[in-house]
Length: 487
Length: 100
Image (cartoon, rainbow over all chains, first blue to last red; front, side, top):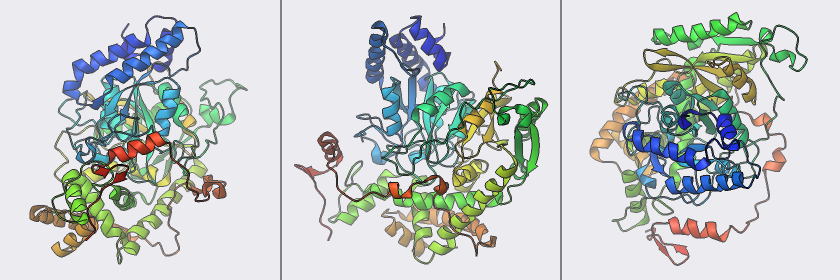
């Protein structure tokens, strides 16, 4: 049995039937990391001892016939902007190179309580600012399907680690597409939950009104299990809410009436919107073809496809970057060389410590965003840039509200192209920003969306984006299941 | 077009020291990016309210979110770790350089 390709429920069954132990499982993953990490570069820290120790605890419970959760012994990788107590957390930045997390993030606390095992911390664009993981302050991560290409970003390490079977599943964070786009580029499932569904406590803040933590997995079912484990209200994050769940939503492809399923669960009653504005000039023709085929596929099963309009789409990128940069400039003011991380002195006064520590600690993209955010929030520019962007954000959100009166979900590409070559977009910052074109609107509106692998351009995977109404993660995941091989 | 003096001023506000080379590079990049942001000028937002929280109406009991500002003692172990993280310290205190 190949232990590195199992799903969560298969591991759970295997552990209960004593086909393998939690320790054997963890060792299989550590061996794979040992073998393949050199060419992928997905990890910033490997927590070998911690993983072995935790897996032994699970084996103890099994030996004593104690009940274990479905996540017990599941080997996970965690994006290195989420805190795991006493483990180094760098955010892929030189400014935090030697910083150790003083406590667990809420999502980590929940996963640990359920017995999940942490294999290590994964690479990202510095402070999650980027779309290729090339802006990591340490090294770029490679796409497992083509080592000359990027894995996407910013959760590139988390997506590559899952795709290369270096972990069973991982956690990422998504501010403008940072879970969905790398999931699409690496051919795995990536869920960006509704804003507020998962507590952000212990996630290093980038843009607080946009950030969400979510799972990156091999199957939709795994994404669902992890999402359910980490979601819910948390008193440590005042923006988190208790999920108003759609109970037991199951998408039925049965033509016969089944009283167990609500009307909305019947595929014949499913209304899918396809935004005209998300099929743009300059889009990769092959990607377009694959997405259109996947839409045809569900239509053939009975779903109703409707063309829709999201008229403010062309304003999404400037709006998103104005909001994200403004919030980043405030959030990253905390790195001052005093409280933690890199500290450079040399001058006489306090100001010189700030200026030097931040000059040496931050990379170019982070500096760009902090400075532009500072500029658009400064006196004289606040109304013209920041406030204007927050008003256009209202219009972008209203576009979605209107569409969701007519349709249940929206289908779109995740990215206009498959994984691009290393170095292709690092020269011009604007070209990198434009890669978020189909994903950033979802964060501005706070909606849930999932990337599902639906095809290939040559050897490169392509993801379909399924966007849902607030807190309808369950529905978009169930629809995503129809694209899986065994379905 | 944003000028060098402006970029320098922003860098000071953002507490980031820039070299002459960086200054030139950022001046060029910021001009292009701010031009691009200028696209929003064509949108009429005269009667539109800003959105600061995308799903505010889902927060039903806003009163519950706002709590009284009463300091609660932190777990001493966490406190120790937080102070331990500081690059420069003296006993239980974080040491800083003089402001002036």
